[in-house]
Length: 230
Figure: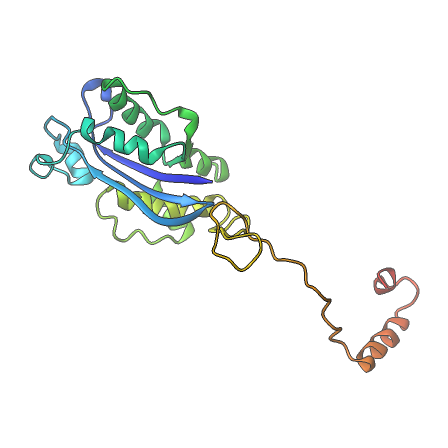
C-alpha cells in the first residue's frame, strides 16, 4: 500500500480570497515503511506574501520570485501522487488549496476520500487532548527541534513519524515488505511470513527436569491448573 505524507505552506487561509500555495512537501511510505522517496517544491504564488504568513513559514517574495508557478509543476505533482493515500494533518485545509489550484488550471480535483486526516485520528484517539502536530510530537517523543518555522517537507517528515505512532507504531502489522518465500530479492507489496520448520525442535527439558516437574504437580491436588493442560 502506497501512502504519501503531505503538507503545504500557503499565503493565507482562503484560496477564494486569492491565497495560494507556496510550498508542497511529501514523504512516501510503502506498507507503512518510509521508502526514502520524497517530493518537494517551492512555488511562486504570483502575489505578495502577507506578513502574517511570512511569520509562519519564512518564505518571502524575494525567495519565491524565481520559483516555478503552480501550472508548471501541476502535472508532475499529480503524476507523483497517483492513487496513493494522502496522509495530511488537517486534511480539509491542504486539500482545499490543492484542489483550488488544480481547478484554476481546469484539472481534475483530488478526491477527498483519497485523504486521511491525522488530526481527526488524533482527536478520536485522544479526545479532549491537544492534537496539534507539536502536541503529538511531545506525546510520542518525536524530535521536532528543527521545526523553528513551518516547512512543508520537514513537517511531512515529522508527520510521517507521528502517523506511524497513531496507527500503532512503525510496523503495526509486524509484516515486512519482502518476498513471501525463497532466497531471491525482495518483492514490493508482499508481506513476509516465517515458513514452517522442516523438523520440530528437540525438547529443551532434560528427563530429570521433566520428572521433577511432574512430581511437583502431583503435590498440587486434582484441581491444579497444570493438570488441566497436561
